[in-house]
Length: 384
Image (cartoon, rainbow, N blue to C red; front, side):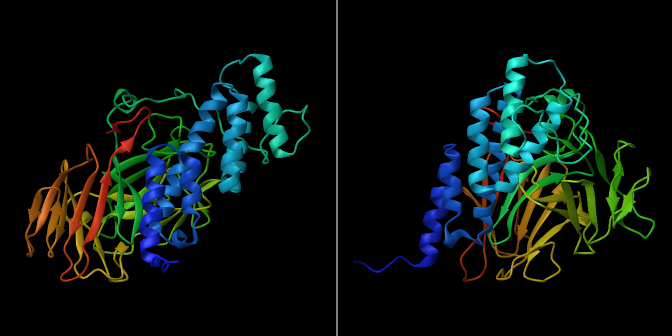
């Protein structure tokens, strides 16, 4: 027998297999591969796993709306195989929708769905499945399956969204701009949509001038009957100015920690808790515009995105419709090569219309990589 492959080689091969399975929509294989010990702590593997689970959750929600009992049962079983807590949460969300349906469904199909959810939750088969807590989310009035044009028809988008993967730094959903609405997955007006017990438009994040100087993010509730908590206190109607380390609770199953570790930058990160995700990501980068919103990726502990072994800082800056990527070690993307130097930078469209790979120099070290990609929509393609 030959010598076993080095661990880093096995990790690369497994990660490639997981990515390929995700691209082919072989979600079970993608999740199985991400569970390998070599990928246990790999941030990109976690991103692949979250993306696969997000697709399954959306698939289950569609099957529920279409009254596809057998399909929903199969999807729930697959989710439970890899993430039991996510399957349980999906069951609760679907049961809450059944408790206050938007439209009258055929009695036989609705009864079959209720029986399935009751069985999976351990309730008597003849009873109506209800949420495990006394309060249930209001039924959203938005269309159940928003298409790629819905955000435009609903008015100008408050944020431009895309995915960002950082070598050894993990994956982020980027929300570029100064305002974004947090809401339910089924609302086309929600810039940051969640499958959780929230309203269609639940709260808004706004970047505003602060009384203490500079710009700070403020969270403002949009539904008075659905309170928001920050620092374990209720958020007033005028909102709450967020500070580094604040924990914000939007609903019983949706909370985030606000990270603003670099005082010189008005950009920030939302770290979602308890298995929550948004567009497949568990971290959301609020990217503010201009020099004051620059995001630095580097080895210093207080960098907004710290990467321990990075020789040169990488800087991201939003300038109008462009995202400028700068690194003194040089920047390369496809056939475009920017030589090392203090002014080495590359301007990219924001959001990117297609996947973009950026290699950044690190002075006699392996190159550092950033990957930008647009949001996926049903049937392929990208969503602006």
